[in-house]
Amino acid sequence: MSVANSYAFTPAFAGYAERTRSSFGRQGAMALIGAHIVDVRPGYCAIAIAPRPEIAQQHGYVHAGIVGGRALVGRVDLEQVLGHGAS
Image 1 (tube, rainbow, N blue to C red):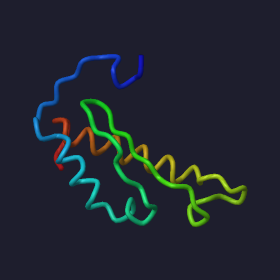
Image 2: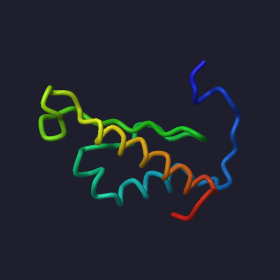
Image 3: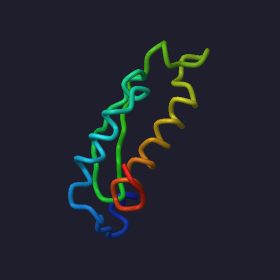
Image 4: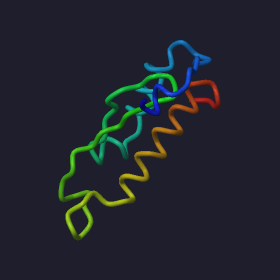
């Protein structure tokens, strides 16, 4: 069972998916690194990024700062749109 399906969650706001995508779309840093939302469901947001030299560390892997920043953005967006903050 995936984490996204391990519990039932009802969002406080029915338009959460569009609000999440809209909020994410206004973030210039995410556009700069080429990140995009793949999927949004209650309690779950998948964000993808294509590895490329501009966001890599010296060994060729995507830099941990990019990965960590992406995870934080997804969490903040979900908290804001699911009723735990303001967008």
